[in-house]
Image (cartoon, rainbow, N blue to C red):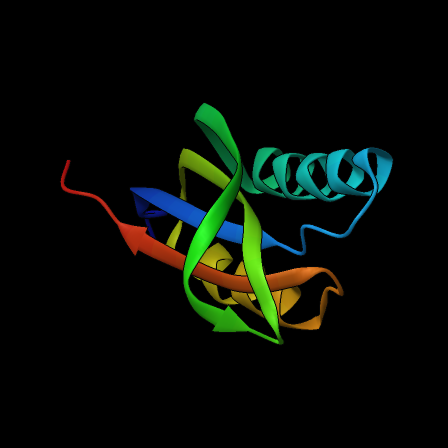
Length: 98
């Protein structure tokens, strides 16, 4: 059976109270996770931005945007890891048009 590779983009928001080292470690964790199962096209760290609404009494978050290609089966695992990782406030993964 042929493996289906799609293009995706993800945005995740980190807790702004993390230190620079902790923030860099989380970004690297997800970059290496994606590289283990696919290919990263672009990583864009937007930095601290004001949230549209408060999350856990926080008004700001550290935004990271990544575009990548991967198998469809990888996305479920990636979302599972987002959910269990401390420091992640919100995340979304969306399939892009080819």
